[in-house]
Image (cartoon, rainbow, N blue to C red; front, side, top):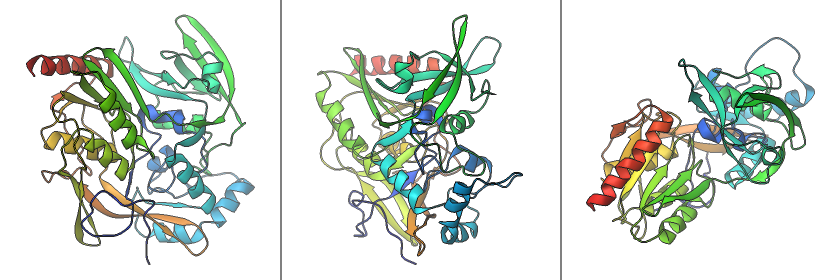
Length: 405
């Protein structure tokens, strides 16, 4: 069976296939959270297993359980029988089966459109060692923004389900409106989600309606004259160009803090182009496909002289690990944070006769020095486990690099 990669080819692949790789992880993991919620075929789309898929074995399989399956879920399942049959043979957790409708949603999401309420969330330590779920960022003019949610607000429950201490992926599933019967198909625009929040000593509830929003995958800020911070939540279309632009437009003499925490993957062409912003050509990664080794290269002349620190954590996955490994192995960046997730497998979508799509693992990638990422992750040069302290430490390291340059 022939497979087709999406969109344009990877940069300088040694075999001349006009294909695009998708090194996608669970794009809803970590700080991406509800930014990606609600897309039909959202987290859990081809190559992008959603949180409940991960917890129930191979991605794309509908978990079992008691109770009747809603009619629309049954229809969706019927529309992807061929893909599910193919995926079920391997048991690979990163493989997935989706209906044509779900895959269409994935395509939209990779293009930067999604349905959600416009918040990113994170787990944060509080006194006593407990972990809570907090709002990390709010998208301007989103339902969450109009309701007055702000970074730092504590999220206590979603639709009446307590989330304190729960994994971020579980919180994401609730925010998306995913169900055990249909984990890959999230709620539609206009559907309501009830949130219980607290700020200081005040607790309140908000009912928000999910809406179709434009993704903000890249955020650029200037903490100081000598530091340009570039946060990438996922590698959707256009991210590489925006990273290049941010580097080109940074003040003269600025160092760069590349924040990849919670970034769980996306399009490898965008990760490769992002690497090109900091490298003067050369190898970015290798991967195996059909028992042949392929290579990805940086293109053009990037900023190779400015100090660079990459910030990572356990939610840094897939294409984000590819970028981190390239910058670390090439001696271009100091990596700060905690060990990355360890998702180094490569998926390719196969269109089935019934219109469904089977996302199949075809190989694994390695860093320029030959390190295999899958199942291992990448160790930072400077390990700092706490998220808040990691960011502070990264800024100090960057200041030290700038002072010595």
